[in-house]
Each structure stands twice: as structure tokens, then as C-alpha cells.
Amino acid sequence: MNKTTLELYRAGQSLWLDNITRELLTSGTLRGYIEELSVTGLTSNPTIFDQAMKHGAAYDEALRRLAARGLSAQEVFFEIALEDITRAADLFRPVHERTAGFDGWVSLEVSPHLARDTRATLAQARQLHDRAARPNLFIKIPGTPEGLPAIEEAIYSGVPVNVTLLFSAAQYVAAADAWLRGIERRIAAGLNPNVASVASLFLSRSDVATAAKVPGALVNRLGLAIGRSAYREYCRLLISPRWLRAMNAGARPQRLLFASTGTKDPKASDVLYVEGLVAPLTINTMPESTLKAFADHGRVGNPIEVGGGDSEAVLAQFGEAGVDLGALAAKLQEDGAAAFVKSWDDLMDGIGTKAATLQRSAAG
Image 1 (tube, rainbow, N blue to C red):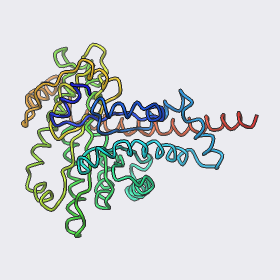
Image 2 (tube, rainbow, N blue to C red):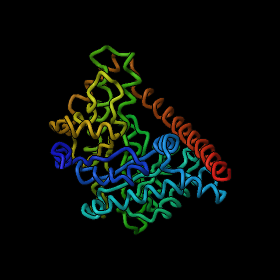
Image 3 (cartoon, one colour):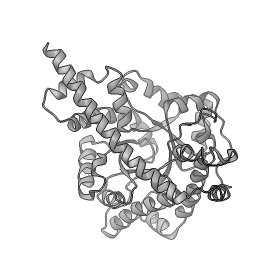
Image 4 (cartoon, rainbow, N blue to C red):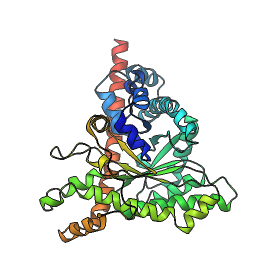
């Protein structure tokens, strides 16, 4: 067992892997991360599947088999994704049971083309959760203004949700409120209010977006400041009357998740967003490279102060440097949603192209 990753877990923070491929499952690598690096959950996205399908043969047999059934590219994707996600969910099931359902989760997202359609998003979220038939599956729904009603409805209907694409403390608070509205409606209806959720705050993209616009002393400091600012809001919500009433009725708190924690700047520490965001009752989901780097030379320092430390002072310095933080968060969210659509469309095109190639090869 790696001492550094175990120390972080014992500090109260869950380490999740931001990756899933069939090879990761069949090679035993994911099991090894669980057993040796204290990994207790997993997130995924279409780009990961797309790269794995384009640059390897691990999915060829499944693509050939599913394409022969005349399925659409989207149907093929969800068949393959559900196969992988359910296998991962089963690997994390002991963690899920040991923590009484608090940890050990995996995530699968709905089509980003449904983002502006609450009813369609909810229908697909329910369908995917039912098909997976696993208690430790989150359905990912973007925390955009259009996505917030779908998040509330999914929670009310009993579907666990991983809220994605959050780039500021204000966006996080809006997502947390959507979750809580769904929980409060369940309580009012006499339903079990224990519907799990995490809120994923994306960090590194803020630093990438501002690196060339601020003084050198501020480079690579915005992501950490946003994370600490959101943690302050999280702690405030945890002791708020509404959350306390919900927890008294049987709900468990939605947890804050730090995402996009792979360092983009080669001049910065490769464990910047792990060492700087140690906090109990939170999650850090990281790429494999970041996980390995932290296990190799990371350090578990003092946890974030409940009040967010120097986050507000740092955010104020960005404002003084001409960065409109609200506008930046809105743009990053809008750009992120557009990137999700592009990644999805690239994936669908890739599935169609490769499936056709495999079928021709089989026929020839």
C-alpha cells in the first residue's frame, strides 16, 4: 500500500481515477490502483472512450459484434460504456459497502445534446441507471443553467447525480441548491432522501485561460483559489439550517469534488492541484499520470482552512489584474459544454468509422 495516497485518504479525502478503458479493467491495473493506491472511485468521459477506441484494439470485438446488430453509434457507445462501467462498479462495490454507500462510485454521462431538454435528460439518466443496475453509479449532468432543472428532477426521481462543468464557487452553490431542492421535495413526498450526489469543480482550465493575462506571481494560482473558495462555501452549506434539516431527515450531504486536477503547465508542479487541495469530506479525481506522480513524490500537507484560507485575497488580485471572474467562469462553462458536444460527436463518428472498417475486414 502506497504511504502517500493512504495518508491522503486517511486525511478524509477520497482519491478517484479520471479514466476508464477496457484494458485498464482486463489488465488488472484498476484493481491494483484500488488495492495499492487507495483509489476509491472513478469518473469517465467520451474523450477517454474515443481515444481508447481510436488507438487500440481492445474494443474491436465489441464494435464488430454490436455493429452487426444494426445499432446506431450512440447505442453502440452506451452498450460498450455500460459494460466497462458496470465492471468498474463491481470492483468498487466492496468500498461502496464498507463506507455504507458514501464512496466507491463510478460515473457515466448522458448525451450532451440533451443539455437543454430537461425531460429528455431525465429520461436518459433513468434509463442508463436502470440498465446498469448498480447502486454505485452516478449519472453525470452538466451544472449549466439549463442543466440545473434536470439535476433537481433526477435527484427527486432517485437517480444519483455527478454534477459536472462547475468553474466557480457561485456555480457550485447553484448546483448544490439544485440537489437540495430535489432532496427537500423527496422529504415532502415521504420518500427516502438519501440520494447521493457530487458536485465537480473544474480547476486547471481557469489557470490555462488566465496564464497569459496576469502578472507572473498570479500564474497557476487561480484554480487553487477557486477550489478553496468553493470549499469555504461547502463548509458553510454543511452547517446551514436547510442542509442540517435534510440530514436530520436521513439525507447525506452532496460532496464537493475537485476535477480537472491534472497540471497543464509543464513549468508547474505535476501534483499542484492535489497537494494544494487537501480537504476532508471531499474528492479529488485525477488522471493516471497525476495519480502516479502523487504516489511517487507527492506530499500531504495541511488541509484547506474552513474559511478558504487566502482564497478571497487571491481572487481579489485577479480582479485587480483585470480578470472578470464571473464572466470567465461563465465562458469556461459554455466552452466546456461545447467541448463535450464536440467530443461526443467525434466519438460517434469514430465508432461509425471503425465499426464499418471492422465489418468490411470481416466480410473480405
